[in-house]
Amino acid sequence: MSKISILNAFGYTNKGDAGIILGMINSLSKYFGRNVKFLLESWSYKIDRKVYPALVKGSLWNFPTAVYLTTKSGLPIPLIQFNLIEGLRKIPVLIDVKYNKRITWTKMLLFDEEREFISFLWDSNIILSCGGGFLHDLEGSTHFLRHLYSLYLSTLLPVPTMIYAQSIGPFRNKKYEKVTRKILNKINFITVRDYYSKKYLQKMGVKTPTVVTADAAFNLPSASRKELEKYLESYCWIKENTFNVGITVREWNLSKTARNSYIKAIVTVIKYLMAKYDATVTFFPQTLSDIPLSRKISYIVDSGKVHVISDNLHPSVLKSLMGEMDIFIGTRMHSTIFSMSMFVPSISIAYMPKSQDLMKRVKLKALLIDIYKCSSDLLLEKIKYALLNEDDIRTTLKSEIPKLIKLSLKNAKYAYLLSKTIEK
Image 1: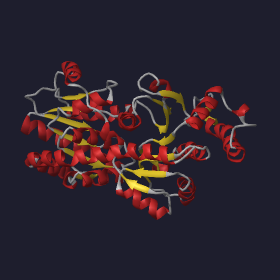
Image 2: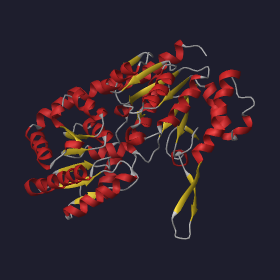
Image 3: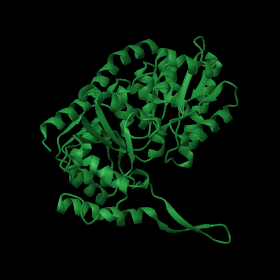
Image 4: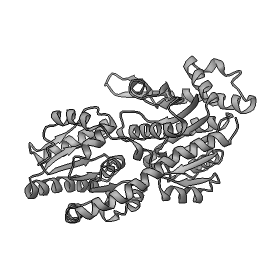
């Protein structure tokens, strides 16, 4: 039996990330066989244990939480952050493993579950850092440091370690970039899902062999038609004879002016499509944080023909529902991967280089909008272009998407070969 460890998963509540994990498991099973035991490190492991066909143990590093003191006025004052305590507990483990090649004097610092977790890592055939875009410091993020902890620990074990179809960078802070470079140079092999990331790694000075593949979610299976029909009964507004428009939105680090322009553009386009095509609009939130903005736009439009799906749907069902759309507008990158995989003409409102690279690779750069420049006129222009060239766009997708599915599957092939060529 093969043992595969997958690190750094965010969790099932983010449907893009869930699509990545399920796509990975689907791809890896094709090379390693069905008799595989998975270990999944997830930050929402209590939920994920119930839904993934894998063994979910927990996380090597907890979310940053804090202890607060509530004053008489009701204002909370942070006393101490648990991530500092986590550092005091976990950093010595790295030192122990590095110099003693096993856990010795730091056993007392770990919980039983954490020791079991590291033991599984030790016995794995390969350790994979899951696909995604978390190795950056945009918006002042330091979450990547927790991912680096898991990665660095992995490099200290006698197990091959691989970055699996990630987007990497940019880093604003040179110190963060330096520590990331040091750890990535200890990894055995890297696959990235966009050309931007490969160029950025070269610029960083990362020497680890790196190959451009495609996002793991391209190998997420769609739901069966029988299963889909059950959901179409619930979401009865999605009909075959209706002009269906799918949308994902997300809050991003925009100025007030840019945010208002982004919201106005979505509202304007919805009203245009309703007036011209009697369209029915469905919002497909990818995370819980997408729901408030989706509902806000629905409220502004003030029409009974705008719907927000807030149910906790399986990513395969979500992908198949998006396939029922006539046109799709996606801010979340994985929503456009889902919709374009179903050959739906899709406009991408890009907030990071990964989305820009994706639209270039499917040869639909004409349907790309920079979120910082999103306006009503520009989005309307893209919509009209997509509708005018619908047949050509579907033909292009039917040509290009299978290529990306094959490239996505190559991630698993590289993982399989690496597990065989590097002796433990």
